[in-house]
Amino acid sequence: DTAVSQTPKYLVTQMGNDKSIKCEQNLGHDTMYWYKQDSKKFLKIMFSYNNKELIINETVPNRFSPKSPDKAHLNLHINSLELGDSAVYFCASSHGQGVTIYFGEGSWLTVV
Amino acid sequence: GDSVTQMEGPVTLSEEAFLTINCTYTATGYPSLFWYVQYPGEGLQLLLKATKADDKGSNKGFEATYRKETTSFHLEKGSVQVSDSAVYFCALNSGGYQKVTFGIGTKLQVIP
Image (cartoon, rainbow over all chains, first blue to last red; front, side, top):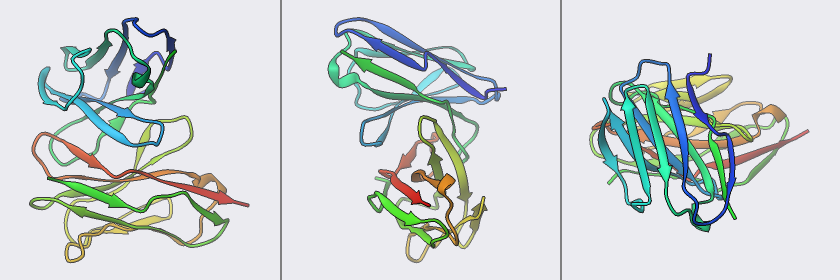
């Protein structure tokens, strides 16, 4: 069974469109994240939710809006997509402090 | 703030060679330290971790020792295989709300 699953895995879309990436974890974790990985493999945290509450919101354009309907889900909606949004977006989850983060397999977003 | 510095790749080794990927960190308090591995086209997976000074994490023949005096967590493997080709990320979590800081990632390529 997949622990952290995100969909879609691949997404190609035109500039200006709005798209969403969904994420679900079945590990019973209380914290979920969105990370962005650029073409040079640099990994940067975007958001973190703990028990559905936003606790980390890094400097991210407000075109990006996370939504956590419950502890097991954290979706990412992106408005007015730009070329620079092309990247791999990873959902992740964890439980407690100082412990392991479990990553999804990534969503490859290409904006054309 | 927290930071992780790891050697920039790519690192190219012949099969059965000895591997060292250096990682040093700056953090407040006593962080937990991690190595994650990302195989091509996949998400990040935890490779090993250490939660306190002098702890040694090990997995799949890889080892890293938490050295507080040198603020280092170097990754080593005695004999690499082609299947070890991947990107390796050093990371730390100094507590708080699970904000994990990642290094830039080091690409390892093992040739037969």
